[in-house]
Length: 133
Image (cartoon, rainbow, N blue to C red; front, side):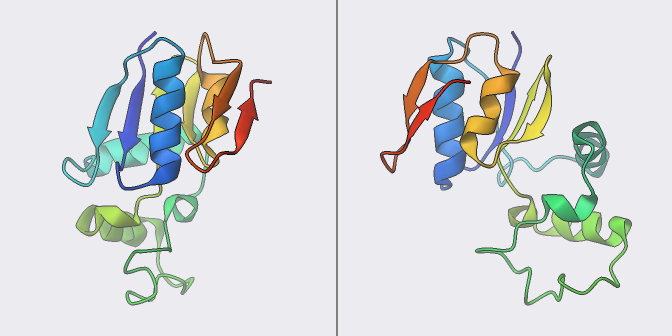
């Protein structure tokens, strides 16, 4: 199974998601999107296949979201994409791409349905236990 994760190693949710993927027996392609941001076309493609609005991919916490006034509904989807390209930290994570689908895996256990052999039980960094559905 081919798996790609758009990952931020500083994010606990992203680290937990990556660990769940690896525990399922898959070594994913890891794209550290802050170092290697997706192109505008790739970002549009990911949003389209996830079936979410552009705004749903914006991250507020720990980003220039407020400083840029992105909470204002005046911004078009194209303008929001421009902001995400200029400031990749605005892209929420982790995004996981598998043959079973593409998903923003928040919470991290959202990755379970995308894996062929998900672990039966996983303990997150904070001690929370995740049981496979």
